[in-house]
Length: 175
Figure 1 (cartoon, rainbow, N blue to C red):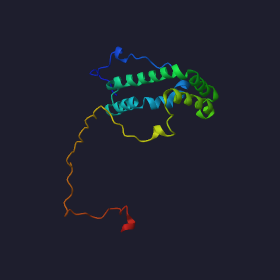
Figure 2: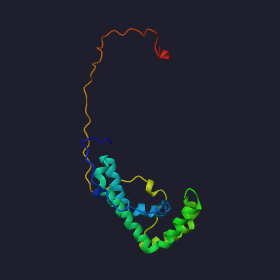
Figure 3: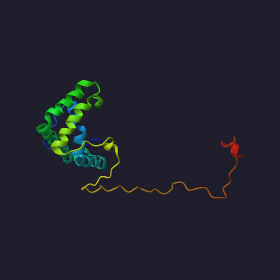
Figure 4: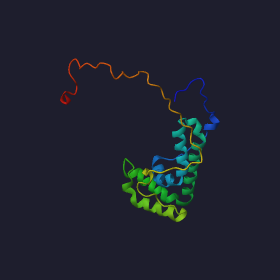
């Protein structure tokens, strides 16, 4: 996005939002359940960003995504804090890449706590990569009409002389 003198930037008060102050291990531990619980809000934000191609127009949707994530982690902290921290610590300490495969036991305990307290199932494998049709309350942006230009060079008349190529044809096997 190119910024010119006519570009209006949002005020700092519009951008001021409480941030998620979590480590990457904690975000990774809650990622599957967070993605499922905040799916509609995330989809609205991503639709806005893709369709409008202007981040300033999607500030409200971005705040809604942050708010949803904060609410999710507050709920988890109230009910499944110990299980969540064990899972996040396992991810953090078990491998350099925070691989899930080393922490299946603590993941199972955390998933059981989430299921018991919230009745939320962990999304199935490949859930987030499936194609989905999103129903949005926002109306779709107007599409730009494609401009059609007339042909600038008219074709040759049918009776125009066509001498053979000076150095032969590119397609010599057709002759």
